[in-house]
Amino acid sequence: MTAEEGSHSECWICAEGSSRTRSRSKLIRGCACRGTDAGFAHLSCLVQAAKHDEDCWDVCPTCKQDFTGDVRLGLARARWELHRTLPVGDWQRLNAADGLASALQECAGDPVGALPLFEEVLAVSRQVDGNDDANTLVSMNNLGSLHQKMGNYELALPLLEEALEAQRRTLGEEAADTLRTISNIAMLHLRTGNFSLSLPLAEKALAVRQRTLGKEHADTLSSIDNLGLLRWHMAHGEYVSFHAAEAYKGTCELKDLECAKELLAEAVKGRSKVLGKAHHLTLESVRALGYAERRIDELRSSAVHTRQHKDISTEPPLVKRCRRRYA
Image (cartoon, rainbow, N blue to C red):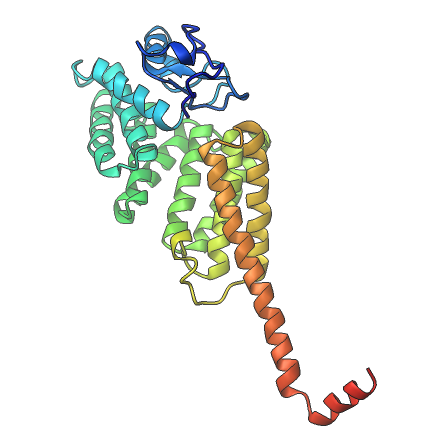
């Protein structure tokens, strides 16, 4: 989001307003800060702040939520340009490459550009830090998740399973990183239509996150959303993307759709409160909820039509005449 010229927004770093930005980039916001004028900053100012505080490359210091969209992508590109000439095994270069890969995948829709960066980071991490290092395991997860989204399921599953085995052994079953991998494996099984494998993993991730992180943690809300999406696909008996939903001609289970609707509504409510209504994850949940509600309405409308058609076409004529006469 960019601030309109003439608005009262100011860069929270340099305090320069939107009407005095000709010498700088526009004021932008890509976090969960609330308020019409809150959270805006110049990208160049954000870069300077991040040079003094590594966390500011990824997380807004005010709302404590990850940067998103153009802000995240701009910071990731700047970080990479700053550190790309460092030795291959330098931790700052590895983190910059990993951050750019994540931003390319999630903010620019460029998995092809992200792939070589994730591959390089994992290869170097294995060599420098070892296979059981926490950062190496995160890199396995990242690369596995990217392969999953690209449809390379045969490459994704071994990486995610290797990461999960090591995380359970070194971090524990209920560690946040372990639960992220469990959740990613659940979503991989969802994509391949293996719902019997996906459901228990998704339910486990949600239950543990609710207990250990709380009901309003971003990871918990992600699990709620994921479980809602899983129920959507289970209702169709196969993986049916939203793009293909209107063309789908098969049957649907109303019970699973209603469960999906309930979970997605909970995700919308939680994300709206924690991340804000304009956050891209909130909007994704809103979109999914809309599809579930429309499909439920279609099924109920179809069921009413079927019952009415059956009443008209199959009842004996004598019964019809009697009902008209005694109405």
